[in-house]
Image (cartoon, rainbow, N blue to C red; front, side):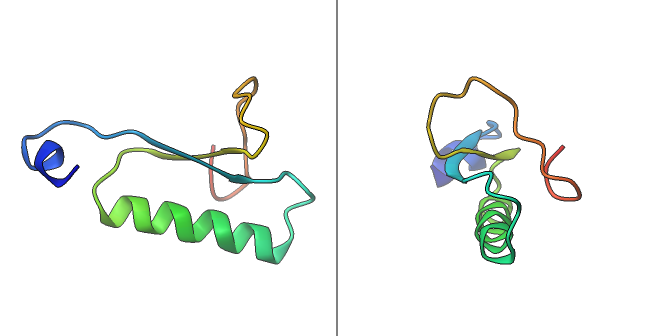
Length: 66
C-alpha cells in the first residue's frame, strides 16, 4: 500500500469496528485508534463502518465521524 500512496493515489479504508452500542468509551476508543492509525499511514478518509458489514447505512459518530 505504501507504493500506492507514494505514487500519489488515494487509499480509502473501511474497518468494521463500530458496534453502534451507545458509544461506550471502549467502542469510541477502538474507532479513534483505527482512524488515527489509518491517517498516519496516509489513508484518506478512514471510515468506521458497522460491524454487521452490510454497508447499508452511513455511520455518524458525533465529534469523530461525520
